[in-house]
Image (cartoon, rainbow, N blue to C red; front, top):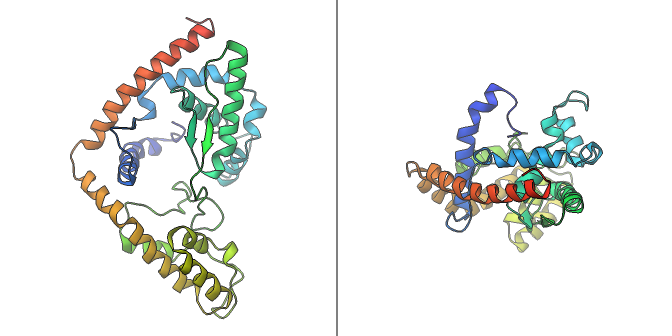
Length: 286
């Protein structure tokens, strides 16, 4: 919901949803075990968001590091930015606790949001009685992947990302545009792998021996940045091959994604209605 700021945003929602679900399914999310649904198909989340907003101080929201980062990236000021961006962590909290989730898989940059969610839950439980579990963040082995700009996390919004839906050729071409060590102006200049986002990708998608070779050759200036980018492109495309094949198979099934979202939406609403009824009762609104 926080993506809607213009008519152009609205036009992109449906294809973006389908692309995202195809990515998830290709990566291994099983709709038989997980409830996959669209946020806006569960109107109860907006009701809970409004109620949580009543108990969340503004100061809690403006101190979240990602808020200031977003304001900077959007070239806004705290005076001109819309409430949707300020209040996003409250909506995120509603998304989590409406289903009484206790563990949330997130990137490293989202940890402050989960900490804020716990504060909101704690305050709600203190005011109205024990209702929600305090959610805990769950990180992967690679909790933060830098984007191709080498400065921000990989993000579709910032166009510094790599798409699972891209062809191997498109992925390789995108990687060639990635920023590396700004102080390495010539091939025979020693590099600094520890500050290079291409090296960080090698640590995820290349084996330990290859990572050591990349480090040694970069610091000794026997490997150029273009060579390094082509190397990681080959490794990344190998890693993604099966996922991309699975994605294409799923995409070829007419109506498959919409069927999953329809069934998931019904299951999610059943849980949401029950939770919201409990919230209304605890708050004396029923």
